[in-house]
Each structure stands twice: as structure tokens, then as C-alpha cells.
Length: 450
Image (tube, rainbow, N blue to C red):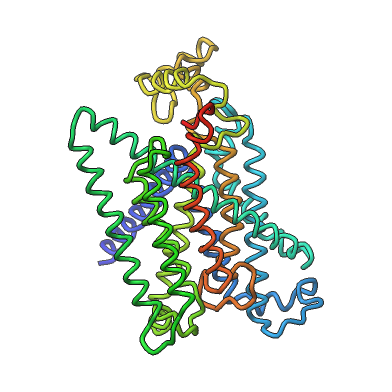
């Protein structure tokens, strides 16, 4: 019995060791091959920390003299929660901003900053992140007040970037399927079906908004009715414009997708109304929901921000900064990338196999695989990627504090009248930007808008 128990214990320890080793290897491979995923996970962790500190850090912050000094707010609990969010947000902004500056000029995978800073040394980067996250808790309140106003501007920039990327995405989607439709009509039928889905979803969402945000017995709810109706009028305006002769290259499919997005922004704005507002019928239902349901909604909101930042940071076709592919012929980049992919002598992530490494050690010269990897262009702009996460750090601070209002409800994210008007403005900016893309080629025929 004793021997059997001893062997079982040894087997359990070996299994645990093997599992831990496998997890370490897997995490190391993820960091090597998908640094964007690793950075996204770190950013999500920062948002969770800000969320927890917002709701539970008041007893700790009350013991820090330079934070408590000159505080005269009535609702101290919410004010301290706001301060915790600002400080975590500022730390992450500084961290990703420094990473963005450090990555300026990285064009090839052979750059040491790519190998040793962007892709490798996860423990070092985690330590730096913790240091930057804790640093703002040493700053006086005046510094955080300045940052809070900067965050309003940075969040607006983040939203505008999202809109531009969305407009470019739907237009490229349309152009690609139309081009494929010249050889196969199935692509055109697919566009037609998706167009119907887009407008059908828009009308369905509009109907639900009329039902949820004009509840029976709540009065006229003229504001909500006006916002929903104006959204439908905006959809009609740019849909008609996309079919007008003035709109060169206009198509109804991008209009349907922008219409659906505009309806979503309107819905998101209305559901951000205070929960005790009589016309927010959906908010009344959410107030009665369980804590698990509310937590799930908050996690979904945070995950959507991470995904938006991930997609924006990976898109460098629209936003080319110094150190990216500017000035480098596209054909040359594609040839180099193809050469790396076709090099069968290289191992994972361009690392040469054992035979080449041994030969290189004997001859004293670099192997062909290492040379080709060093000259391979990076697939996205590292500096821009980290800049997007710096702006997203500002944006999440605004979401968790109701865009800087101390009246942000506890256990809620993105609730308050400021959030309502910010999203409403974002909806109209999106519609106006789309209409501009339709008429700009006709107004300025000498310019290239491709």
C-alpha cells in the first residue's frame, strides 16, 4: 500500500511537471509567433485591474496622503474609484507610448528591438508593465487632472481611427467581391444577400429601440424617439447618395453595413442612459439582472475594446508612420516575405535547424536562413500598434468613469449622459465621413482617393 501510494505520488508530480513544462513552452511559442495576442492579453489584464480597483480600492487610496489632499467631493467612494481608474490607465498609456517610441524605425525582423523587445523576454516586459502601472499612484492629483482631459482627446482619436478603418474595410470588401463577380455571379448574389441582411438588421434594431427606449407609461420620451428617427434619416441620406451619379464608385452594400453600424451606435448610446431614467426600458431590465449577468456584460465590453485595438493596431495600410513600409515597394516586400515562407531549411519563426547552426558555428559565418530572416520586412507597424493600445488605454478610462463624471455607477461600464452624447456624435461622424468618401472623388477629380 505504501509503495503504491508512493508511486502514485511520483506519477502525479511527474504529470504536474510535464503539464507546467508544456504550458511554459506553449506560452513561449505564443509570444514568439503572435506577439499581438500577447500584448492584447496584457492590455486586457490592465483593464480588469482598473475595473477591480475602481470598485474596491477606496480603503487603500484613502490612506495615501497626496491623493486624499484637498478632496471635497460628496461621493468619496466614486471619486476614489475614478482616481484608481485614471492612474491605472495613465500607467498603461505611458507603458505603450514608450513602447511605441522604442519601436520607431523597425522595418525588418532582424532588428534587435523586434527580437528582444517586441517578441521576447515576457517576464521583463511584465515587470516593466507592473512598474508603469504602479508609478502613477505616486503622482499628485493635479497630474491626474491633466491626464483626464488628455484622455478625452485621445479617446476621440481612438474612435475616429476605428471609424476610418471600418469605412476602408467595407469598401475593400465590396471591391473584392465585385471583382470576383466578373468571373462568377455567385459573389454578386452574395453581396445582394448581405445587403439585405444589413438593411434588415438596421430596421429590426430600430424597431427594438422604439420598443425598449419608449416603454409604455414612461411619457413621450421625445429625446429617444428623436435620436432613433434621426438615425433612420441619416441611413436614408447616405444610402440614396451612394446610388446618385455624383457618388463615383458608390455601392449599396457598403451603405448597408454603415447603416447597421450607425444603428448599433444609436442603440449603444441609448442603453448608456442612466439606469433610473424612465425612458431607458432596457436599463430597467438590466438593473434587475443578476450580478453574474452584469459581470458578463462588462467582460464582453472589455473584450470588444481589446479586439478593436488589436484590429486597428494591425492595420497599417491606412496609417503609415515613420519606420513602416513607407517608401518600400510592395512587390519587394512580397518577394521577401515569400522567400522566407519558401525557405524550407528554416525552422519555426525563421530559426535555422541544428545542421545549419552547427555549420555556422564551424565556419564562423551566418547561415542563409538567418540572413533571409534578418532582411524580411515586418508584417505590420510595431510603433503604430503600440500607439493604438496607448490610445485605447485612454478610451477604457473614459468608459469606466462615464467620460470623466464622478456620477458613474458602480458595477457598470459606459453608463451616463456623457457616454450617450459621445456615441451619438460618433454615429454622425461615421455617417458624414462615409458621405464624404462618396462625393470627394467627384469634387476633387485630380486627386487619387484609391
